[in-house]
Image (cartoon, rainbow, N blue to C red):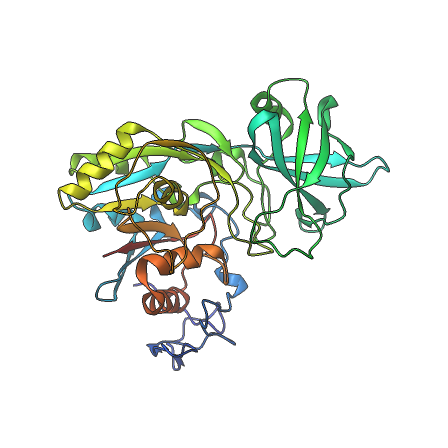
Length: 392
């Protein structure tokens, strides 16, 4: 039997003796220990550092599909706790599981300024005309991670490994960014000695943030069904799938259909809304999703990237159309969802824009209850952490 986790001290297995109370008008008491200074008010809560997944599950002696799975039903607020291997139990014949087949680039590069200052350049989004949105980062050797830099200069040329260069043109401003903040993202041109993918394979490395304490090979940042490289960061909701589990789902009558959305940098430090990202929804996927909806099945998105792509091409009636381009759609509770009935996703940081998307699907009260349960049960956050399946 798994020991009860005490959220005050992760090293103890003493049974909980307090209750977790959520702040706000829809507060719900949950049996369990007290999380220090907690509360989920306005989709804001404290995430204890020890609940951040610092390494892949494989490094913890687990298979990909042995991460934990919280299953919640937003129509009646039921919450169940399982292993990701149990996923077929919760899906039904006739459901459509929509996956993002974008692969993860080695999108981080060492770089130098003209004065010799070392920095880290993160490639985020490839734009038309050969341009890129890039992020400037200051390396932190003591942690092996980096933090944003805000002192880029228009016209500046950065030196990259192997004879490459990045030329900064103008700041890139997403519409919802705070106007008075210095720019962190830049529109740039890359001058490379070979094609981008070949260059990144030779000189790049996966983007990682401070909670991941050591570097991991790029294979740890790929889903098993990736077919087209292009994401700056892993579409991580699909990481736990294995070929065996996908086969089991298909054999059980679940339809698995693909689309592509190349994810940019997640901007964890700033909690910024999403900005333009390239997507492609094939006509075959649009037809399959519409057929499932017409027959009464459920359309279940694997990751917020899939939701964003489907909702970009869905009309007001929820009919999905094929499409390709760059989307800057921000999904909020006010906008709502049209084409998606459920979502498989990771656990998201406090105040992140993804929580607004989850609230649009499931409602604030349900989200508060499930995140309280995740904190109480000791689920792990971030790309190497546990998963949450939200169903009607």
